[in-house]
Amino acid sequence: MNQLVYLIPLLPLIGFLINGLLRKSLSKSVIAIIGSGVILASFVISLVLFFQVKSSGGQIINYFNLINLDKLVIPFAFQIDQLSSLFLLIITGIGFLIHLYSAAYMHEETNEHYGRYFAYLNLFVFSMLLLVMGANYVIMFFGWEGVGLCSYLLIGFWFKNDNYNYAAKKAFIMNRIGDLGFLLAVFWMIAKIGTVNYTDVFAATSNFSSADITAITILLFIGAMGKSAQIPLYTWLPDAMAGPTPVSALIHAATMVTAGIYMITRSNILYSLSEVTQHLVAIVGLATALFAATIAIKQNDIKKVLAYSTVSQLGYMFLGLGVGAYTGAVFHVMTHAFFKALLFLGAGSVIHAMHHEQDMRKMGGLKKYLPITHITFLVGCIAISGIPPFSGFFSKDEILAAAYAKNPIYWGIGVATAALTAFYMFRLYATTFLGNFRGSHEQAHHLHESPSAMTIPLIVLAALSVVGGFFNVPEVLGGHSSLHQFLSPAITSEVVHEASHSTEYMLMGISVAVAVIAIVIAINKFSKKPELQDAQGFAKVLENKWYVDELYDNIIVKPLNSLGSFFKNIIERRGIDGMVNGVGKLVNYSARQLRLLQSGLVGGYILFMVLAIIVLIYVWINDNHILSFFYKYF
Image (tube, rainbow, N blue to C red; front, side):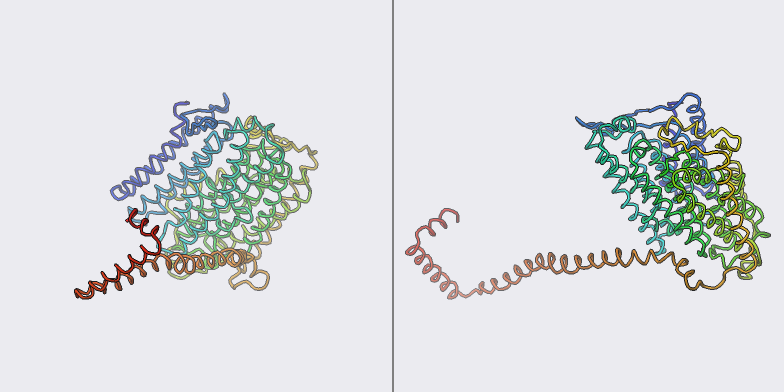
């Protein structure tokens, strides 16, 4: 099986090359088969590899030396262990379903753009696979930058729309801020111990001072804040909705935004040595979870609600990482991949039926028109709200229990966020699927369920959203924490929080109760009287996302643009260009004046000869050294 490991990332790369280079000549069906087939093949290999790792443990496979200097050797190597094999299944499994869904969703595109879309999608999966398979931080960084590039390409896929291009640039630039932190951490490791291989770095922690550990982990966390959209680098993710809906599902569920969680989990040994960084991760994650949830309750674009939901759920994952519940965070990555991919693809089905309408205020009553989309979307809403026995309940409550053991304030804010999550998700559900249809007569006439290529992935993801939590049932509910046991060789710094069964039952009961209350309130309110008018007062602040984008524009974007205009117009055009152009103009003017000396009159030439002789005689008489200088050099 070792000989086939390299095929997992290579197959999507081959799919990218074929569809990218031959997109104008291949038919749509062939493009879809190639694009989806290579991901399915990678999934099959990943599945076999997963069971091999489960039975015989992990391994590191070296292929060649990427950098080979006297004091620095960085191999191109893959580390296949419990953590990476689990992520491989999530990436390729969810990725295949999204590719299959895309085959029908993007069918209106021309052959060229259809092929370009699948090429970008394959490259996205390849980059994420490279990120999680790498055996050192440099290989991880290659994949890290790859997913950033692909997000730019896919968010701005419809590049004729300038707003979409702006959203793509925003994502690319904000991620570069985080990437700088990642790079500095890598350079710091090289400077201190001369290696970036995971096994070597974790074995050499004694060579780091506490200040080194804190600095490196904070810098890595800055990188994670960019990729995984945490405060203050989160504003690119909601704008990423500019891309096609399946792209949103891929970014939010299986690839880019989970990169930060994977990186910190992979570095769990380093983070366990810095209490300062762990507190920082927990506080930033919790603040992001609550802040994004407050915004989501007043968004009217169906994809924007889900986008802020992702930001909030990522905050939960970072809370888990910050309190030492690394397995809980990974567990929530897995369950979130199931129900968030389901919700985004369900939203895509709604948008497809509504002829690209995304405003929930113009929907309503879709339950009877889209029965499969409706029931699967409802499953996703229940799962993300944390209602047992759906998957979100198990992963969310594991994080909340760890937060309670660390600090009850963390738990209280987390439960409040869970209540907001249930409220805004069932506001979305009730406004979209319940009540009366509020769209146009033309839209009502064309409403129909999506084709099977779109509904089959919805059904599969709905099933996973129901049963996904049973992969790690806690002991208090009669389980064996199977995921904890599986990941324990890769996550050696897990913090075990002991609590009595009565305490755990109490925590679960409270979180479920507040979620149920929020659901009942949302359904009763929005199924009967949806919010059709523009928000007023504080609700308007939430609808406008706390005006954070406007704040960034005023304190960062506009000053930088003004500074850029100053350098462009004053320094470059008037200063540098002025001097360069001035020299040219001076030479040009001088030449025009000197050419007047060439008059063609013999008398004028004789006059200049006489004047030249007089000057030479004067120089000879007054300073013989000057004349010697001219003889020598001229």
